[in-house]
Image 1 (cartoon, helix red, strand yellow):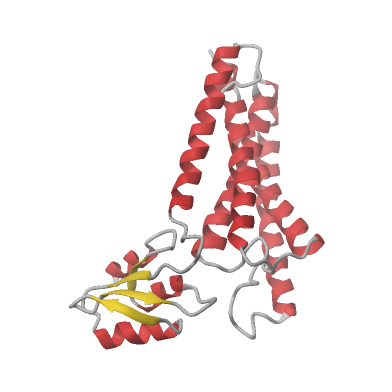
Image 2 (cartoon, rainbow, N blue to C red):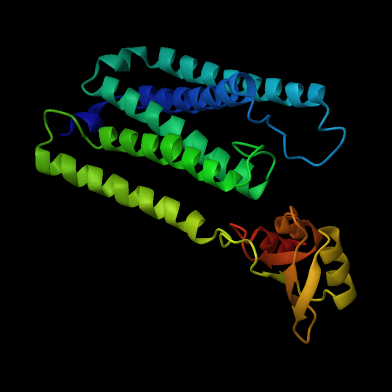
Length: 264
């Protein structure tokens, strides 16, 4: 039986939690404090939120949450200390820590950068998407892939060269699939293509036009129902904000989050 399968479960859970927390600490300490590229809520458009005291408070609460996750990881590790002597437990602990570290950065990229838009990796550059993707791949996908490779037996004496290459190839394939979806959904590089917006059934043309006005957009085309439009948003506007004003699908955004409007 593979040594990784006989290793204890508690060290594995502890490794993931500790890696996840370390990912948060790495992000917060390096990007929020040392490099000062962004704060947790840097992109929130509110005079009250933009107060530096509120920004620092949000960063502090974020780090406190990472402390709680790390403390839970240490508690689980202490509860499973006897299992650390089982074959392969040390490698499983390291592998899950790397996976947790990578998962943190992928989750942060998808949720914080692209869905909620509360901050970007670098707020002071013309194309923040490049930095988002670079961080997502290097510290998210690559680190998690290495952890998965170790978890599947990569680098161990029991796995031969052919098995190691196969595990690495599968990890890279998973990485490409994970990256491919978000990249395919990104807007064109020139930023000049119109944005297609589909509003939920029952939305009148006047209501849709009022929603477009929220982002200072210009309607360039509409179908007969007035619920499907092509618009040109104002420079610097975020079309994804339309999800909060009745839109069900906005092109050039990552996920059709507005489909949740069906539950109203």
